[in-house]
Length: 393
Ligand SMILES: Cc1cc2nc3c(=O)[nH]c(=O)nc-3n(C[C@H](O)[C@H](O)[C@H](O)COP(=O)(O)OP(=O)(O)OC[C@H]3O[C@@H](n4cnc5c(N)ncnc54)[C@H](O)[C@@H]3O)c2cc1C
Image (cartoon, rainbow, N blue to C red; front, side, top):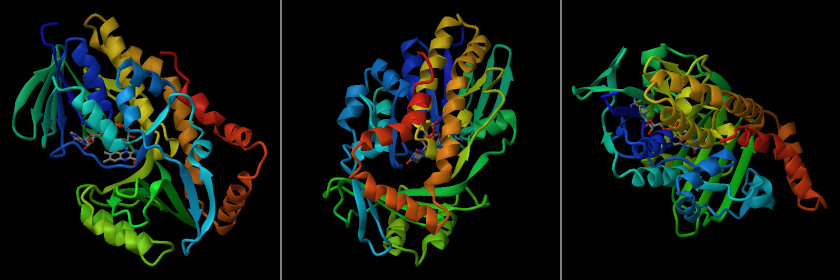
């Protein structure tokens, strides 16, 4: 093949991770990102199971471990902020071995910095694609036109590259919306997460030390909403309507939301497609198979997908479409197991009734004193670990 130029759309997690491997394999890689700079927003994300193995193979596990959230404790509170129960984070999250938890922005930054020899073009995006037998002609929104050997859509849950190739793909709505943004750490949280629930609403807040700023997540149950994805003010209005006058620190957090410059808002949704490639365009990460944040596995799937795709491209000796087919064959069973887990967890994430909240609170209060609490948690989390390791790489 004469053209060694590859275009990746999206500098989130999947895009820079694939750029890392493709650059090492000798491809000339360009990453185009619609945002004007790396998007550092987001909450804590987990890297576990096969995702941890890939991070180690990238030689970046140590760098990520240094940025581990080091979370110590999870506390559930009542409407007036009084404590219901606190539990050690390691117990509740069931961390195993070298798995880690890291702020999404920190992980994205680590991958970006590890790909200094890759060209990142911020503030631009694909405007049109012309997929041919020997390459893909791309016109960018900036007006620039170029030809690439293949194009990778790693532009997230609402991928516009996916839309250009596959048309409108309906998302599987899991019944809730999530917003995340930075807040002043007025609670003085020190490696502690605080959670508050009322029917149809979940608030979580976290900080990596009393001197650090905090992150807040406001999640609410809702049927699918129609709104302009580029209109941040309209999205903040939706969150305000859901949380104004609600319990705990809802109104304080809404005030902080207005000032936040890293506001993230999206639906709890999954992407399901019968195929992840068309000609010389292939989907990666959330664009291909977003399992939703309720799975806690989106980042690991993206990392493993990047590794498998690069591996299959290396084995395919220039036959790009054969590599895409092999990548999908290897990934699909693993992805599907994690999607199933994500759907199951979404049901519990935002409890619908006072009864289910009371039941959960009772469980949290008594778990502390349970003589076999580790085994109880292990049993609950077993499907997550099975899904996280459901691929041989
Ligand atoms: C700001 C942000 C915050 C997030 N916070 C959380 C969180 O707290 N918890 C959680 O579980 N998951 C979160 N996610 C999702 C999580 O990052 C993914 O599930 C996972 O890491 C897989 O990553 P990805 O690279 O496939 O997608 P993403 O991380 O979503 O990255 C996609 C990238 O593509 C860019 N993009 C979008 N459209 C275009 C376009 N047309 N052209 C070029 N670039 C484009 C986006 O700006 C983004 O940088 C967040 C995503 C974002 C973008």
